[in-house]
Image 1: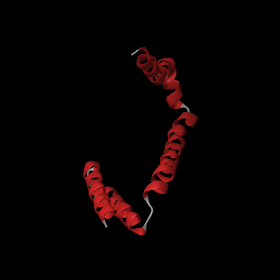
Image 2: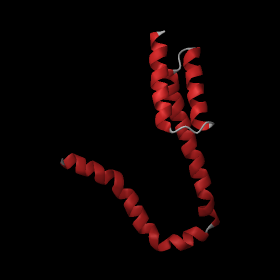
Image 3: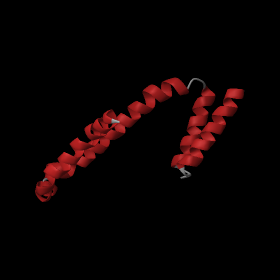
Image 4: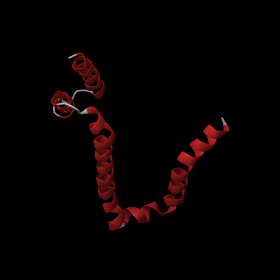
Length: 103
């Protein structure tokens, strides 16, 4: 239990202190051109990290055959273009993966 409390504090305390420390200066931060451009760069960095995380552990271990690629493409289309809820796409992926494993 003490380790869990220390870990929770270690995860959340820095962000909390940053918010408390920056709050008095927030109005001047919002007016700065550099700060206004920061979310664009942060968003780009997060997208890059997510794509790297998609490729290395997921793509390299899950997409082994062309049928795996077809299933992943269909799931992507269901999620992005047809706008199905993510839980439905996950269920479809699990079902499709089960049937691909049987073939």
